Image (tube, rainbow, N blue to C red; front, top):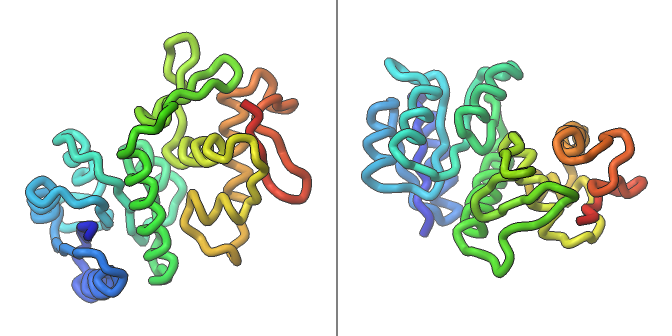
Amino acid sequence: MSIVLVIEDERDIAAGIQANLEIEGYDALVAHSGEAGLELALSRRPELIVLDLMLPNMSGFEVLARLRKDGCDAPVLILSARAEEVDKVRGFRAGADDYVTKPFGVMELMLRVRALLRRASQDAVPQATDVHQIGDAQVDLHRRIVTRSDEEIPLTPRAFELLAALIRKRGIPVTRHELLRDVWGYSSGVTTRTIDAHIAELRRRLEVDAAAPQYILTVWKSGYRLKA
């Protein structure tokens, strides 16, 4: 049974998330402050952490920084009323794996939790081949880094997950809805242009000419395909 830690100071919200996690079969722990959350995270070692940003005394950003500094590598899903892009970027750069804004749908939150736990379990099992070549870049799925000539190519966590999803399909075309489901945890009925923005980021980082990609290819009226 996976342990999920919820660090949320609004007790009604925390209790609701805990109840739904337990219905889904998870062992849900709750902390109402950053300090208590850190203590539980380091003592119980949860498989996933749901973290509010607006916490008393210690902000969620501070909690996340402490978690990573203390060697906690569990996926972190930020849950916050702060919907500004700058906050999301700051969260991802600090080491968050997903970001959900309040108010949120419980079903969507559970899907994202499930997706993060699934990816974490996949990353924990070394594959027969962890390093993949895309042009002159190397993608190490196990270490979660992309390099070119021994220099790391910076990618946001979500862009890396998208790249990994394309690699795992081994050249098979993948629809946007499949990528939303597998990478973001959305249901197939959700549509967004978010994927296209992340694909553009990958092309800027990996392609010689992002306007004429050779590896991250568009499949007309469908999605994308990786030609490795």
